[in-house]
Length: 416
Image 1 (cartoon, rainbow, N blue to C red):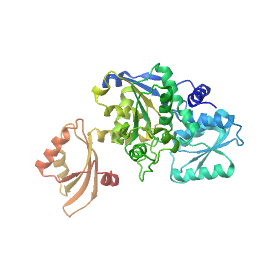
Image 2: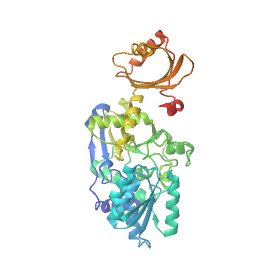
Image 3: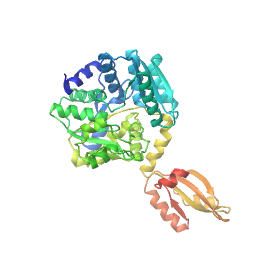
């Protein structure tokens, strides 16, 4: 029986039938910015623009190699796992059924169909992932199909571990720090185990969305925790419960090895990488890069740091929302509700308070709160965050009554 390292070596050699190793690129911009040597493992440059193809391929390879009685496969996914699954179905010329929520964006449906071609059938079931996941499980049981999980399986973890083997071969030594994005935990479990069993593990840091900290919460209490609420913005890593098998490999890491990444700050990183480096990243793909903002410069100066860029399947229809969140994080855009007088010239008086770098991006009456006043939602964008301090002083001096709702999630969620 082969051991883990042997299995990963075999999986790495086998996956070369699909694509060459993804690049490990030194990034001059991030290196100069941090004072460290920053290398990006570009999983966004795989054939399906994410690492998920590795685990799916290894699962298929092992199932077919073991003389699987059924040649029918199934999965539930609205993202990268579905696309990796579809690509592998076509490679092995095996029939696959992908279950997706009805709410899945058409772009993701089209890409999955493109990768799978005639070998993949897509079924849209339910409004939420849990609905289509149950449907996929029922289908697999009824039809005798192989259910291909996104992360919670030994063969999936072995496949994702090929990322670690490639990094070790490309770098030629162990990095000082390695940052891994975490969703269900398959990638992190595979890569950490690979380096640990080689006997030369770096310091591992895990990047998790602040709105879905399933690994962090589980490490705090020492057992898997299912979150009661998940922010789905980082859709590639928004998981309510870390996988059972991945957690078995990750449970000994300290809770403070997990960095929780604020979603709005993550958007600023995505825009920065797009504008400066020309690199298109999905939210989950930017997680590892964003952690650099949490390291004191003196702590990482001169160190070699590998960041796994897990995916680049970004739907550009989301770009306005990403830019909006980035501006709010950087303090360059705010939303206010003003008590606006209902008289001629009121808007002109308000505009005179604004500075030369201040721009109104939204003006909307919400309701008439009294006969002579109305509540008005006003969005203001500026070029320097310090301009808002000047504005606040001017509003006070001129007697404008208002409330800053930028960071009030409850009100902002209703009116912005």
